[in-house]
Image (tube, rainbow, N blue to C red; front, side, top):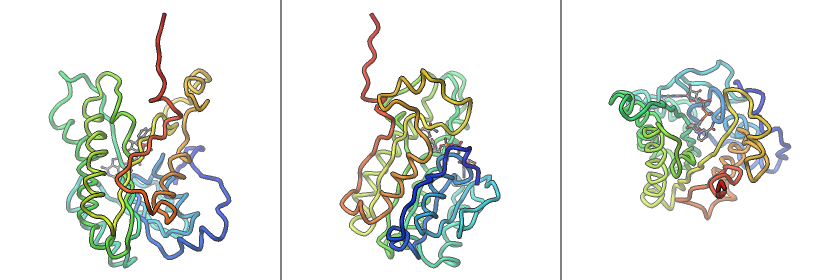
Length: 254
Ligand SMILES: NC(=O)c1ccc[n+]([C@@H]2O[C@H](COP(=O)([O-])OP(=O)(O)OC[C@H]3O[C@@H](n4cnc5c(N)ncnc54)[C@H](O)[C@@H]3O)[C@@H](O)[C@H]2O)c1
């Protein structure tokens, strides 16, 4: 599992938390790298058995868990993924819908097929996963976490498909929370800039953030672990913005 040198939570969780989660099963999508890999690793550290799904897994499953090849935009593949968990693990307590892509093109250049691919991967996948996993999650009184984005609320140019998909995911989160409660809690995390790929952030990138730094995958992993665990039992239908304060920052130039 490639954490890009930045993902592992690296915290001592203590035996109490590990014990509480022992025997519980989580499915994390897009777990081959980046934020998804960090979430899978953090959950495994906490005692979860993690099924790490990716269309392109990196070949090193989380400790005690397993990798599965799955394109979450494919209805049959998602159904097979969840059926495989029912057969192999026999339960599902946590679902993290993390897989996502961005195609950045001007509105006049992006094709319908590209638009549909972004929406299918980032938004429709969560519908497919929750629909397929509803029975298992209800039985386990489980929880779902969708990884959205602050781009649900703010934009750079040429990101319409991505922004629409993430805005849809925030809305889907509260709709699912109302439909599936009280047995299943459903929440979203909207990360800001998380250093997963590309050149490392520059000092000025860190300084731009009210929190003083760009985010790390472990920041999102810790929040996801909390949202799947018992300490967040009164929280559902909510969106948690984890962006170092960037969406609260006014920028005026004289
Ligand atoms: N990194 C950021 O700054 C940031 C900010 C806000 C939101 N997010 C969101 O967080 C999530 C993870 O982002 P990341 O930066 O770790 O991305 P990443 O590109 O590093 O990793 C994404 C993973 O998802 C997998 N994936 C892509 N399409 C898939 C599909 N159809 N089926 C199965 N797996 C698929 C990829 O193979 C990859 O392993 C995404 O939903 C992204 O939109 C990221």
